[in-house]
Image (cartoon, rainbow over all chains, first blue to last red; front, side, top):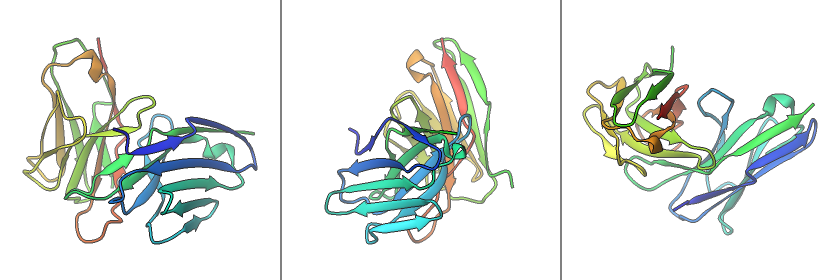
Length: 113
Length: 115
């Protein structure tokens, strides 16, 4: 059972363009939504995160938009750069004593120079 | 600080063989996790630990065992490897305490091939 659905699976963007990755969740107990960035051969690393009481969070070129009623959230990368080429995972956290992360299936982003 | 380290980086096993993956963290984190990453499926939690001497099952625990004898180490064992366990395994750790904005820090991964 996939509780966090992520799309698209892959994305190709020109340098300077906007990259948009979408995620949808089902479990209303989720209360923390991080995005992780993973470069080839490396482990995922936290990029940016949002709580459900905030509709938008921006850090530099990266913005999370959150729609609680629709149970959807998205990552926007402005002015995309070739160095942003990586796999991006959305995740959701909540419920349970260990507050486990449930990950989306990932989006492979390629930014063309 | 080395952060989270994993040993080995790569391993090839034959079906039925056993092995142990080692994860170590030097951040004094209470919580540790083992994930597997497969194409198109993201990361799935195998087992986790909320403190020394404790372990619990995650989403896909079958075929794996874990131990947390020391706070800084979390071991993942495969008693009888199967081709379906071919994957990239990631260990992660996070601090305990109040609040839910607990970043999980991931190791570099172990690539396992079971023939």
